[in-house]
Length: 500
Image (cartoon, rainbow, N blue to C red; front, side):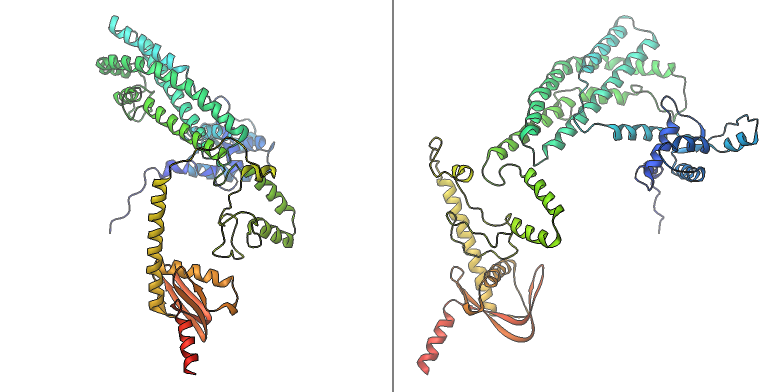
């Protein structure tokens, strides 16, 4: 059997281990000290300990252990420079020195940026689009007119174009990432909704206008530069001083990067940046409309209940265990509540575990619900043509009735529900029947289910009965259920009386 191939990215993924490891705050502080504010520094464990003691109560041995672990992860490398010392104490302090690795420094910088990032939206660097267009135009002009411009000037413009595009692209992605996060909030009402509407209608439109104004110029200039790219790349490669193949080049030194840049600004392509921007904007606006309908609608959940739930959470936190149980039952249980004025007759009485969320809703007029006034208000609503909906409702009712007859036929055919297996439809019908039986009394047996066309009663037995469903089994201790056609028990009783 062949051995599994080692994952080449595993050493790189270990660089992020210290961010979530035990004692992560200490690791982050050590990396921040080694990384320095300007440039990375080489420091000993004693020097790092002195800096850490402003925030943590740690000794040098603990810091040595943390540094050794960071060396194993690849974030830190031991220093090799010999320090000139004049005393034994200085020698001991300079004995073990450490510095951050290249990738470890990058992980530390980017993680600090994430930890320090604001929770709000990131402003899009849309002003860079004009700079990109100007730099590309100047580059195309120099290649077209001069033929052989200064390499330093060409390198500066190429680096400026790709660096500015990266900043613009990253800020755009962060902004829409924040927008998507806010749009998924179900409690978006009031000031939060107005702020989001302002962002979408105002700021997003400004971003879209800047992109629409600049992408044709940028794309046209990139197409004009395409015949000169090979000579341009050769010129830049000859100018660079690091010739190792593993060197990480400055952006814009390969043809693939130029092709990706051209593809991003091709607004007519489906996978381009402008097309993706339009799609993301349309999706955000549609979600905004959905939130607006949810806020003004009286159906479903209505307005947000976030403040109510927070107030309820405070009451739960301050309540004793016994009071908390009563508070939960009064808040979420509909078992002891009935609407005396509105609502259809209840076919099935709610049981003790029925929640407000699952109970049938009772429509109440807004004026009565909010002001206690029965008088009608507002304009007369138009009478919609509900012919199609009525037909669909009739078809759905007929289909439900057909499924119910099939399920009832299966239950009647089985008769005694002991050591039997039922299908999904019969399972659903049986569970509904058991729910209604649980809310009644034993004196009411047998229970007649007129709409389904069968009766069901309980028979006491020694032991237990088992009903098998597709998703599990129902075990009943001490009795079993018997299903008969509706009226068969009555007929049997009358025949018995006549015989007597």
